Length: 107
Figure 1 (cartoon, rainbow, N blue to C red):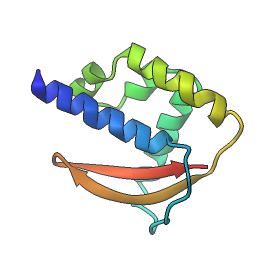
Figure 2 (cartoon, rainbow, N blue to C red):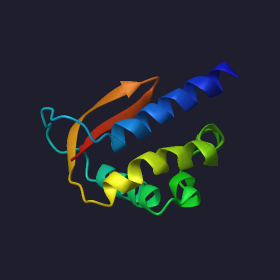
Figure 3 (tube, rainbow, N blue to C red):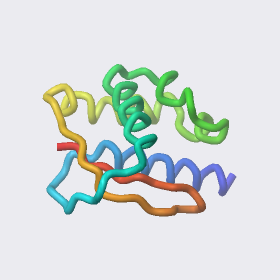
Figure 4 (cartoon, one colour):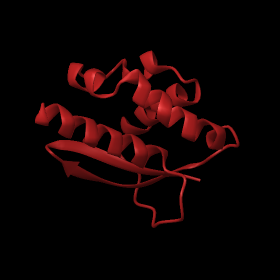
């Protein structure tokens, strides 16, 4: 249960980091070329409120950890801002609980 809770917190943190629409920060060098398509897919799923697409490439733990209700709550907050348009800026990456986490800013 604790591992699942930690995973959910990590995933939600990652989701929020990807979707944050906040004040400016320093931009980092570009990430690996495999990273941006994943971000784009996740953002399109959020914009479309498409939970199935959002979790499609995730592990079973990811799919269990991010409930449809949680996803819809994030969409409700983010979609109105996203529909006005945005640009993605790569901020950097880090290792968190053995996973690579890529941080993005949307403005």
